[in-house]
Amino acid sequence: MFLVLAGAAAIAGTVRADDGQSASLAPVDVVPVSGLVDEVVAGAIEDALVRAAGNGAQAVVLQVNSRGAVVSRERMSEVLEAVAASPVPVAVWVGPTGARAYGLSAQLLAVADVTAMAPGARIGYSGKLIELDGSPVTFGRADAVLRTSSLGFDEARTAGVLRYAGGDDGVPVIRNMLLALDGVQARGAVLDTVVERVDANGQVVRDATTARFFKLGLMGQLMHTVASPPVAYLLVAAGLALLIFEFFTAGIGIAGATGAVCAVLGCYGFAALPVRPVAVVALVLAFLAFAIDVQVGVPRLWTWVGSLLFGVASLSLYQPIDGSSMRLPWLTLVAGTASILLAFVVGMPSMVRTRFATPTIGREWLVGMDGTATSAVEPEGFVEVAGASWRARTNRATPLPAGTACRVAGIDGVTLLVEPLEGAARDYRERGRRDGRS
Image (cartoon, rainbow, N blue to C red):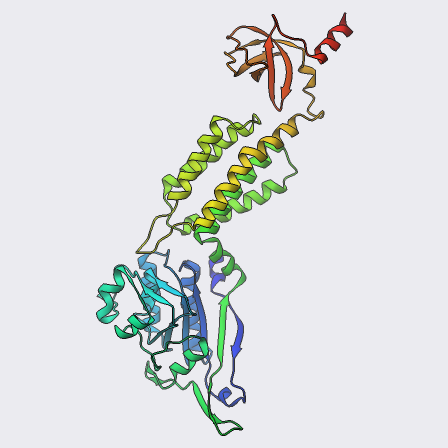
């Protein structure tokens, strides 16, 4: 399964002391937990704990900046169990400044050995606490508050949620987190992450041990990005639009192939996210409605029906899960809606009209021919000309009842412009043809 590749991590960089004295200390592995916790991130956390147990790391730091999780409570329970049972001490740092740990992601702090936050970070909206071995995890006396609201650094420190060897100023950067780990007793070991030395000025300097940063592999990053609400939404919308474009413009396949890839990736994102099935159906119906008017080259009733369905589907696409809000950002909503409307109200109809009005299609010969209205043309309907049925529109807003004889006065894209035989002004192209036959 390709998600196994998501756990593959690459060393992205290190933080070392200036004089190398800290090189003798066991390193600390730092694993980013950013965005929504999906199957990719959950697997990466478990892999990081297994890797740390075999690569000589003395601790693992989960750097959390997540507004929730889209995995099931059962899957998140497995992750929390892995953290709680890890033979290597685990620290959770909500950072950098402005980071969030909301929803099920916040419950990582309840099972970690060391917990810290950067100034300006917030934690909370944990929802119902997950049970491990028959008992729920706990934040101590802050359980009730964190379930439905959030706490900043000062409030979390006062409530006893944070457990680290540091002062009251928080942990702004990863180096401070390494310093805060020094001397902590966890999992039967005492962490040794700091070396003190005297510099040339006689000042005592504290050097932190090496921090090894691990990131998701390429495939893991791709699938994690695709499973974010705005990206999945835009991929599905762009994919369906490109497929319709390819179908009606008879292109060379580039738009269709790109649209298919976007649609497949977007569907993967929808499968990983808490989408409302009704909203997905409305989204598909919206593009079917758009396609009806694209084929005639004129935006009319079905275009506005599609626009309404698309707007409703966009606003109601995602549903909250375990206290985590899945609303689309307003910028994404505005950009996505504006792009789709521009494409189907202006862009595609114009391209279809241009495509089917070219001489290569060869419909100019229909001008001047007689036919019969097979339905009322008021102002649109269908006529039979040269033994075939055509979509038609009155040339001068003169309605044609069903069964009325008519003449083709012009062509607008794939729509014939027709007028009654009696009292109709002759088109100059028609006069030329009639003069040539007489």
